[in-house]
Image (cartoon, rainbow over all chains, first blue to last red; front, top):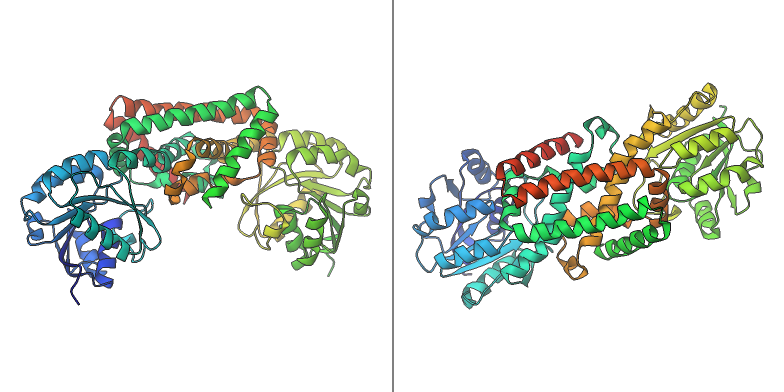
Amino acid sequence: MTKLFNKVAIIGTGLIGGSIALDIKRRKLAKKVIGVSRRKKSLLLAKRLGAIDYGSREIDIIKGADLVIMAAPVSTILNLANPISKSLTRDCLVTDVGSTKKEIVAKLEKIFPYYVGSHPLAGSEKRGVVHACANIFKDSLCILTPTKNTNPKALSKIKKLWTQLGAKVKFLSPGEHDKILSFVSHLPHIIAFSLISSIPSSYLSFASTGLKDTTRIAASDSEIWRDIFFSNQKNVLKGIRLFQKNLVKIKSALRRNDKNLLTQILKKAKSKRETLG
Amino acid sequence: MTKLFNKVAIIGTGLIGGSIALDIKRRKLAKKVIGVSRRKKSLLLAKRLGAIDYGSREIDIIKGADLVIMAAPVSTILNLANPISKSLTRDCLVTDVGSTKKEIVAKLEKIFPYYVGSHPLAGSEKRGVVHACANIFKDSLCILTPTKNTNPKALSKIKKLWTQLGAKVKFLSPGEHDKILSFVSHLPHIIAFSLISSIPSSYLSFASTGLKDTTRIAASDSEIWRDIFFSNQKNVLKGIRLFQKNLVKIKSALRRNDKNLLTQILKKAKSKRETLG
């Protein structure tokens, strides 16, 4: 059977990159999977886990790839796009898994003729190939962000890749993606970081599941998330302002002893949350 | 073997009351466990689950009890204290599991000579005896809030009860309790309610685990939580103000493109969250 790809290069063998690599290997979607990372340890572990055939800290290793997946923090994706392009032929398929898309897509689609932006909504607050695991994309959502410049064949092949990894694929424009994600992902991170910052340390031993769940994602990597926030600055600021308004509504109802209004707000919030499952 | 109690009356056979009843039955800590609830269905289910020996909607049924556990929302505990006292002898041990303690303890210790305030940090956003289950207190924390008026024998017996249910018991004054809980429990609820209120409904289909975890507790019962917020109004408002300040710090760093400051704030938040486990 012909494989979907010949040589797949994963730039960044962390939680997401490592998991993609594992899945491609296990499902035999490519003849070879190679990894690039700044960290030797990450490459060694990725190889031991069977996620990659071999790896290197040198970008040169990607020569001859027919698919490159950039699975690095937003700023690294932006910084590596040009250096990487020098090792690739023009017909190489390129995608990335960055958490923001407008800035990345604008830059990468100019550099790579066969580029498609991806954002798999999977992963966790953990980091590193040590947490990689097969099947994390099964039944997850993967957003692709084609533009009028996107090559249709590239789009269909990248869609096929994610579908074969088990993801449900949806298309959004890069702008729509960033607007939606600023609310469903970036704002919750801002809030979790703010919330844990507000808890006096000496009270933490009294924390139960409520505080733990609401702040779990505050254990996420600081630099990855700083990058995401700045790369989606305008939308994130808008989200914060809307959140502030809603918080003030609850605060005023509480301060003014308006039991009816507060009940109303909480009831509406509860039924909205219940639709999330 | 003599049992710890003869007749235990549980006022409110919901998630917490039902779970306590189940545990007391299974561990054979009482000869009889009876339940009082406004809802016939809840009593029937509690009986079928083996949580109570029998139940009634009439408070009179608690006559002869040597332990009464009030497992109802804060306002119900406050409202039922006087009516309940009429069916009890003066030497009956009384406790409650209300989420705020200052208001409740102040009232109940005047009514019941052998009263001790309890707050088991267990439970979830779910409600009803249908979600009750044995062993939910195992390895959980239970805060007791004795005052200078608390009878030492009552305190030691209530402590023994929670210890036998598997909980680790800590003592706090009612005021300390409410201050600490306003941060580790009430504030996260306020934030979760505000956050889900801020997400446009049409974006909810793009939610992944981050948003789901940060807002899980917004599915909590609106009236129970309205009661808690008002019963701990001053502390909750203080917590909100502190949270607002921390959110504004993050927002300003983002707005002013201060990458170093934002990284610093996120790093500090991350390492604080990591101590929570």
